[in-house]
Length: 239
Image 1 (cartoon, one colour):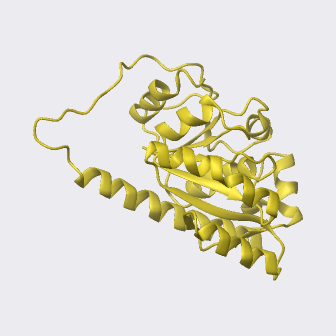
Image 2 (cartoon, one colour):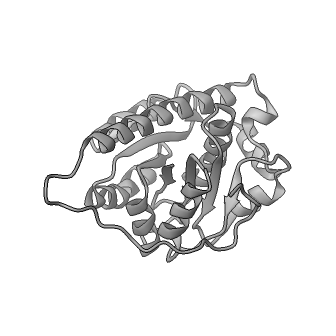
């Protein structure tokens, strides 16, 4: 099971919106079953999922303390992808999520305040040795600051080649548990999310291959944790 986390110290960067959009697009692209996990105490992703009528993606209720063991349980239950939304702060919770994830997406709006805030999240990823990808989110089409943001972010890490632009259909879709792909399948927003997921899926696969072929040296062992039953999950999942 691949584990994808969205993290940013800056509130309003679009973590929750992108979490839901990418999870649904992953299911549509055949990368499921997908499970969503909401670590943010505000519970915005949870609220969106509760409004959702479609049966996928699934939702897992867990805590930071149970995250590692519950991810293992979800893996055993057959889930192929977990998407984790995090709170807008640098906390122990985010450190735990980053440590348990294979790839970290840092949504960043093209503004000076957002650009200044990425440093702390980048430092956590580097400390954990986890790869990160910046996603320029909420951009104004053809705005000069968007190009400037891409250039600035590229000095700190990889920037996704897909920019997500500010459009009303993103906000509208989050009201009733849908995504832009379900509101307007042929729209520009849907095309951006599809392209972004295709890029993220490729990065996850490449990271997985590097991990598989990087076998531990002779005499070294891989540390593991004690598995125990998961907590209360939002929907019944196959055993």
